[in-house]
Amino acid sequence: MTQVDPEMRALLLGAIPALRAFAFSLTRDLDRSDDLVQDTLVRAWTKADSFTPGTNLYAWLFTILRNLFYSEQRKRRREVEDADGVMAGRLTALPDQEARVELSAFQAALSTLPASQREALVLVGAQNFTYEEAAEICGVAVGTIKSRVSRARGRLIELLGMTGPDDIGSDGATLAAMGHS
Image (spheres, rainbow, N blue to C red):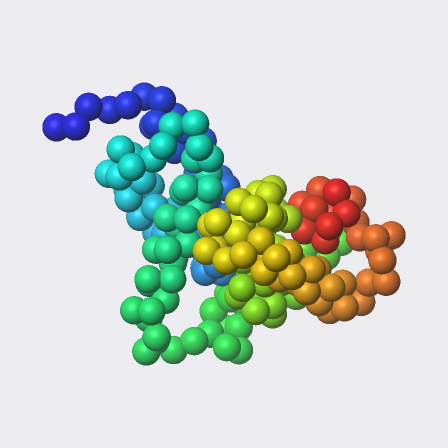
């Protein structure tokens, strides 16, 4: 039996909310995202000896999660896609206040972005990774991440019918995602 490292256990448990948010941004399915987070944590725990203490644990975990997601995607190529949003529609509740309406509109607009742009925007805008960390997680150049984030922000502003930062609500995550923190 492997000895439990309490520090690593605490760090992994602390990362769960951020991992769940990133996984959901990739899968747009609560069950799949929870499975992806669980697989990530299992992989991280079993490969903990390959983590270099003092480096960015979140970047390491996000890289594991992203790699698992894309491996899963390659395996699922023959599955039917939810192109018309029927399954995604079942996961949402009807809004009962203005903030929910705005969040729903934002999520719908975000889901129309290409996966590479959505991924870059979530990493930089919502998860607060630097461009350099996001580039490392995605395995691309820093300039590519900057370009993807810029295009994603511009497209979201267009899709949401905004003219500038004054149109953005006070929600911190929305402000960060749109580049106006």
